[in-house]
Amino acid sequence: VIPKGDPIQIIDNLIKNNRIAIFSKTTCPFCMKVKKLFSSLNLEVAVIELDTREDGDDIQDALLQKTGQKTVPNVFVSGENVGGCDNTIAAHQNGRLEFLLNKSQAGPKTEIPDDVKYDYDLVVIGGGSGGLAASKEAALLGAKVAVCDFVVPTPIGTTWGLGGTCVNVGCIPKKLMHQAAILGQSVSDAKKFGWELPDTAKHNWHTMVEGIQAHIGSLNWGYRVALREKKVNYLNAFAEFVDPHTLKTTDKKKKETTITSKYILLATGGRPRYPDIPGAREFGITSDDIFSLPHHPGKTLLVGASYIALECAGFLAGIGVDSTVMVRSILLRGFDQQIAELIGSYMAKHGIRFQRGYVPIKLERIEEGSPGRIKVTSQNELGELMEEEYNTVLFAIGRDACTNNIGIEKANVMLNTRNGKVICDEKEQTNVPHIYAIGDILDGKLELTPVAIQAGRLLAKRLFGGGTLITDYVNVPTTVFTPLEYGSVGLSEEDAIAKYGANDIEVYHSFLTPLEVAIPKRDDNEGYAKLICVKSLNEKVVGFHILSPNAGEITQGFAIGLKLGATKADFDNLIGIHPTVAEVFTTLNTTKSSGADVLQKGC
Ligand code: FAD
Image 1 (cartoon, rainbow, N blue to C red):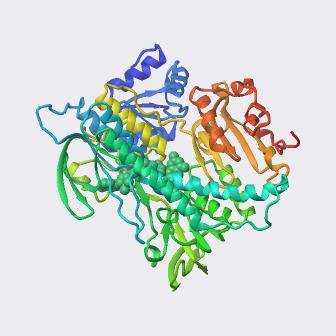
Image 2: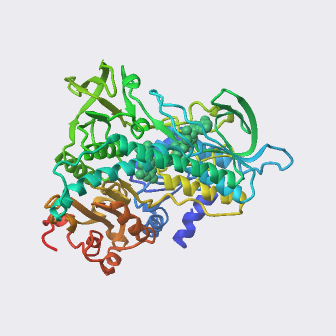
Image 3: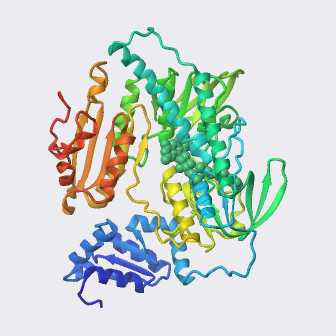
């Protein structure tokens, strides 16, 4: 029996003194389910039944402050917050629970003995966003570091230089092609502002690709120079484990070398997935190929509903490519669904065709050439078939973590069995104390360049510079660079409702029209802004969403507000910058629940 006292102290003591701590209510069916799960695993749990205590509500409020979760059960394993019933069951299924339980059994982390001689203090596998950041920081702090980076060519033979996904086949070329599309729109707007331009502005694919690839080349070179200057040994070779401290590296000429390291950092990123259908790898391409495609893609089918599928469709259509997106179910899974649908309808209005409810089942080459012609057979849920010809088929159906061919079993590193990602604690440490993981291969974390960079830098500082800061993965801002950009930070409306309950959520919103489109008379009220607030937390803003040009720039600034715990009143107190799109957030006064009209009229 735990006596009454400071609720925070009660919570902390229960978590500290017990491997498994559950905050529960006797009548809650989800709490029963969780307790049953642990009992079926023969694991002892410490439980506080909040509905049997006078101070139950105070503890529940303190739990909300501590974890952001109001509902029960609220489960902690080995000091880490696992979450509610669904999270706990998922953690059991994907191996995270086992990882956390083993962690506490192992006791305090053992120091790696200093008398063992290794070739390096740190070897990083993967020279992408995270790997480069970590290796440079570690070397600056005096560690002896090597980074292994090797690009396995795509099925059609595309390959690239040092720097990983972001610089070569991700953020950088994507944003530049997005810019090419925006310029096309600006050219047609310009005439309405008095610029006398030819009636048909033509876009040249080769000029764009050449310009972008030249820029990437200069970045690749810059990374090599930076590694050399910081005395990081760059090995252009594929690395795989021989044992937990030893790696075999194989270069392009198949030359093998063995190296040992005190610490090993996995930063191998992900690669696009192909569907398991005839012709996919032979005739299809992915985002790994599109940015350096040596010929105009022609009529293009983009398969998938991910941000990558929509962004590629957006910039292709923007430069005049006939673009179709084939989507099995919803758009932008994991993002706010109201905004996802607004993006879809904006894109459809701007000439992108959507085939919803279909998946491709076969690709056949019907004409050789660059780009040639491909027949795509697809099928819907009812089994109805559809056939159509395209010049290019781009798959953007997801990405797989690069962890399946690096001998990870020889190092005994635990992976999430469902997605092959590496399970780590909050310090990016795997179950093997000297092996760490960052970036896209990290289980349960966002796949974004700045996230990988931050994790890499802070980890290196902790390992070699006495740092104590750990990466804060909460309230990470992000932007989808569709024709109308979508910026967000915090929770989607769906996640906010799941976390706080529909009755505790207030959504303030407005459609918007940037002033710049008034003269060309386009996109009236196509933009949208909303703030998601929690009533019981003094209308703390837990979700920020904007659909507008330059949404990335807007969201980056406002994100600090959410990180500092801004409330709706703080947004109301802020004076706007006029005339901008972002000022809409200082004047949002219509709630979604009121059902009132939020179309913007006038200035
Ligand atoms: P990566 O950058 O993928 O680097 C991993 C490196 O390791 C690669 O070079 C790989 O070849 C190498 N490697 C793998 N296995 C081995 C091995 N065994 N031996 C040696 N080398 C190996 N993020 C954003 O923040 N903003 C965006 O706008 C954005 N747009 C994107 C657009 C696209 C089309 C894509 C695909 C991604 C985008 N991302 C974006 C995501 C971003 O690129 C990734 O989150 C980021 O690159 C992850 O960094 P990383 O260090 O984990 O891995």
